[in-house]
Image: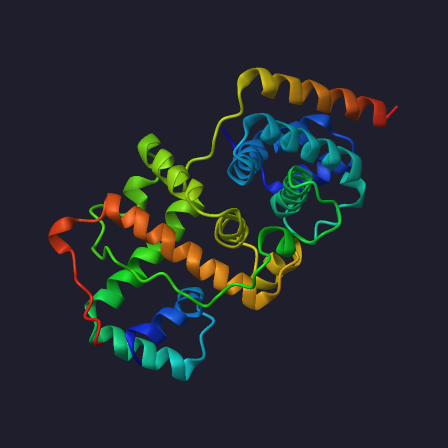
Length: 79
Length: 207
């Protein structure tokens, strides 16, 4: 496997959906290719960071409006 | 604070307990709002989507069967509401997003990694910093909409490839190509900022 082919299979490898024989070739290539190894590690960290990153706070006036609208709708619906 | 189980709150809300519903709202409103903000890049639109999502949850709570997680259900409603706004912005109601965002089929060019280096810190160390949050958003904003949406649905929201394809009206191969490009582009940008220059590697192009 060459770097170029590894790049094409990157999604499947990172997501763990790659075919076992391909997976073996992939890992064999990485054990002899430090840049590819680091790229895979960088990608994993990129995804983790986005997935676990901080969430934005709702602006307080909006949050107040949202909750009062929800309460009102809730009462109406259950009359 | 004692954390009450999500499904218990849902059961109580379905039985008419407003307090339980508000607890669920408080638990997930930031995730819904953040997703909408990242999809739409506009605070006002993100507020509309958030409000529409929770209003719709009040409306359809009876029909929610608890087969999926409540958060998954909410984020799905939010995604559709945000996509509706994106389509409207483009003046389209019926044309699929695929045609709207991509008149020419995606080529198979893969952006080659250029800056390759170990990161100075682990994601766990980075995750709670304001500065990193800004860096993540700036990197996302440089992506085309078509790459950004696929990345947000698949990698941030955690939908499968086929769910992402269905939601966006794209083919699965197209989702995969876009996802790969998005991941590589984001990796490049984050590594330029977070990489340890001393560990930088140069690719051997004959490899």
